[in-house]
Image (cartoon, rainbow, N blue to C red; front, side, top):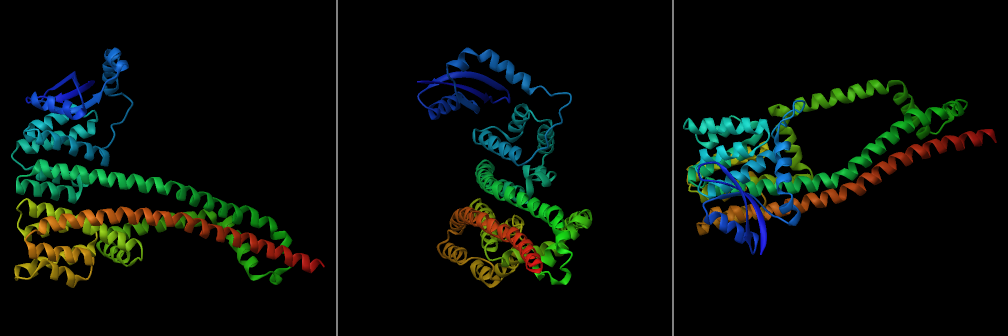
Length: 417
């Protein structure tokens, strides 16, 4: 028998801390739920924790106190994920939405998160749905999150939808962490190589200028190009840096415009490797949202409208917008998607099979599952190719600079002979 320390929410919105003995974690959870408690934290406690319980409690309380000079952390992806998972657990345990939000307020130690939850609670107590309350914080939660919550409210499956959202956010978190981990080395490589090229052009190449002055136009063309590039970096490096910053700012502003987003999304879909990954990722979002909506009893036309809002790619969203009119005229969803030419063959066949068997919601969720696995595999494969490609490209650039300088030195030696 193991001993577990727990923190659980009571039916009146309070908290209770304690310990219990159970053969497994699952048995401990069953005991807590049998007592009418909603487990918030459950950890196996050893001898050190049992002996130092009072000290541990004091330490937790001291950490929880706000510091005068500390700034509250702005809510982000991690806070949204934690809020979603905890709210899902409480709703599945039978707590009403307003009481679950009160419990979350007591659990959170971040004043910014508390302010968001308090605003949600205020809106819910005023008679608004959770999706309407979340709409006031759209930049934090996003269209996909709000649309999924709206689907859960429409089908009376809010707790189940929040659980699905928590799983989705967990997968996104895992994918994001794997991408970041894989990009650390390439990023360091790019920075070091860029600094090496700047140092070579700005400081090393100008040292050979006096050696090459006597040759004039007799220098090989690659050497003249490198010497000119060295002059440009040494004399106008500050201007090049300002122009690069201005170009980045202008590009971001253009990409934020409707026309810029459309051109970017179209270009992304046409890119050989990234286009396939982006297409499957957007189809995954659409299929998961659409399958959840249909499974909760939302009409197909309404589900199409909500699911299309979850897609970030404007080209694919425009293709979805043409599906609803075709369905209203008696057409099939698979045929309308096929005419757009933007959906994968697997997705089209699965949708067609779902329409024929009357299990469109299950087939869409299966499409989401399959494409989600393909997206993760595609991202890992692309990142695996990035590293050698960067090494090869940057090696060629640095080698070209060195070879150009050596060609100039050999020309000087030939002239001297």
